[in-house]
Length: 110
Image (cartoon, rainbow, N blue to C red; front, side, top):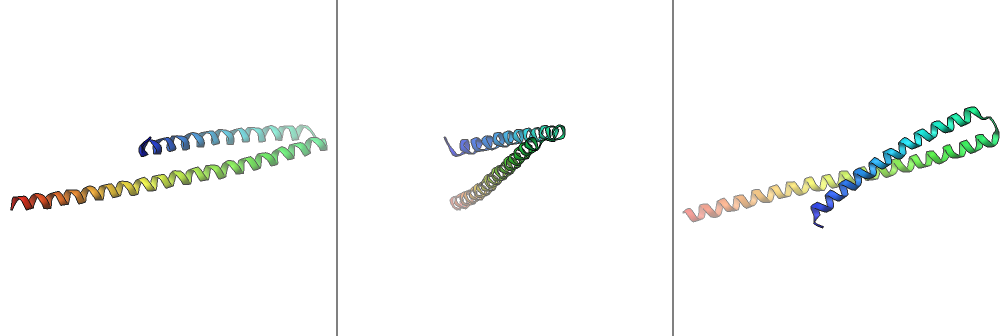
């Protein structure tokens, strides 16, 4: 696998991961709503304690998703920055090679 394929694969992975994390975030919102329904219909202490336990678990999971999403976005930004620098370097090298070609060609004409 060459570098271009690796970068494309990483980009595809990042896109897929972010999509899955968005799905999980949506699922957490749905589950929070269900827990609120359960809490509103039940006033038994043991039920409310379990609801609170699961709400805390959902908060932890949402925080984990946020951290992972942030890390993926940082990686994506780093890849984009590196690619931008590489493209700028390639452009500089092409200009240098062209200038050398012109100098050599002018030397042959003299």
